[in-house]
Amino acid sequence: MIRPFSLDLSRPLSTASGTIDARTGFLFDREGGLGESTPLPGWTEPHGACGEALREAADAADWDAALAACEGTPAARHGVSLARLDASARRTDRSLARELGDDPADAVPVNATVGDGSVEATGDAVADAADAGFETVKVKVGARPVEEDVARLRAASEAADVTLRADANGAWSAKQTRRIADDLAEIDLEYLEQPISASTLDGYRGIDAVDVALDEALVHHDLDAVLDVADYVVLKPMALGGVDRAREAAVRARDAGVEPVFTTTIDAAVARAAAVHLAASVPDVPTCGLATADRLADDLAADPTPVADGHIRVPDGPGHGVEVERDA
Image 1 (cartoon, helix red, strand yellow):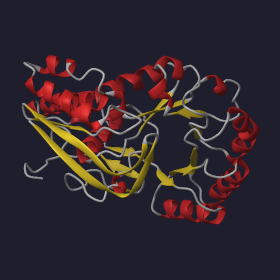
Image 2 (image 1 turned 180 degrees about the vertical axis):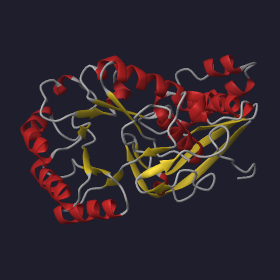
Image 3 (image 1 turned 30 degrees about the vertical axis):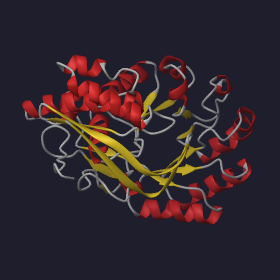
Image 4 (image 1 turned 45 degrees about the vertical axis):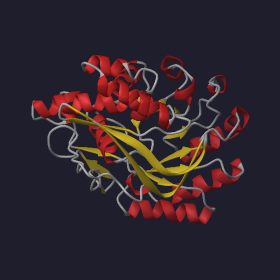
């Protein structure tokens, strides 16, 4: 069974394809397993293509045929593969995290995110995040001159004893990034996320003073090519075609000496819970970007992934642990 949904965002979301104010998607329900497909422009297939693939999957004779119907549509495949994993885990009365890995963690560390703002406002926001229990804070950069962003990051570093990350969303050039790399190293960033346009990987060669995490680049390049230049890789299960494929990518990253970090595409409760289970299944996972529930004004169910002291506990119960009312 396929159930469409639409959830208002608490604030507009800018994407490569424009600004959106709601997340629209589908729940895929089969053999007692529930999956979520929430396509996002610029990251996955369009909404219409996702629905069409899910309808073919719903008519398929078995799980293998259902998954085959979703090849080339990652959000649709995410929903079908999650439903299959959820059904399997529920049959054996174990959590999705244990279905994915042998000895999952009970909780996952998550970062706070601080948006663009003045130097003073950035420092205050980082201090507030630390007071709320977050040990890692990601600061959005790239909307201002690079020197001003460096000053913002210095203020963030001085505001609280937290691990700092910076995310430029591809706003800088390779030349700008190299020019400030030493300054960022002095600030002791854990990593700089996607400083250069996702369309190229060549610009990352020679940036050695600061570790680099790649995110949007995975939409444009093969994973192996990304792993060749990255220190961290940011994995979005919805964009990669499922928590199973995201975990496979994490294993490949670790084998290549690159650390995997999991985050979402501002997903609803089912996919968000699944991402927490996924992160918990990876040993010693770095702090993840999974504290995204506040980006939704509405949701499919009560928040299964609340944050406490900078951590999200793995949802209880068999499977992913989220129950959605049939008439929701």
